Image (tube, rainbow, N blue to C red; front, side):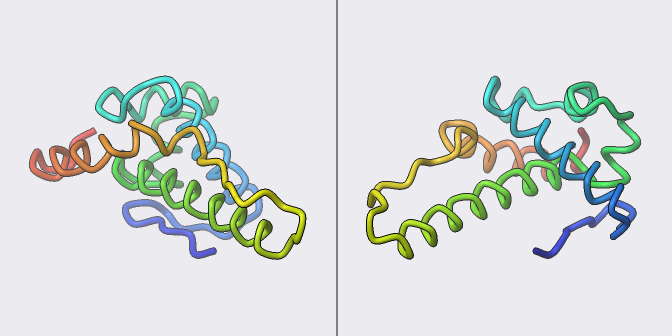
Length: 121
């Protein structure tokens, strides 16, 4: 999987890759609890146990962080579909990750408004 790090310091070091995934996981957790309009990088940093600078260095801007969460959710759905296609006894239904409900629909408007305001987080 390609790691998008626009606005961030790309690193393939195992510790950086692991920490980046922890940040994305923290963002997913927050998005289960709140709307994307209420999504703040400082809160993600707090939940992940890292500094705000680390979030920006490893993932990038707020919009990049939201994009990383959505890409992870799509990847999870793709894997679920692939595993259900390969298993003759698998249920035909695929559960949608929790972060793909109302939050995802509001992410588009949030990203658009953030772009219009210069991408400030």
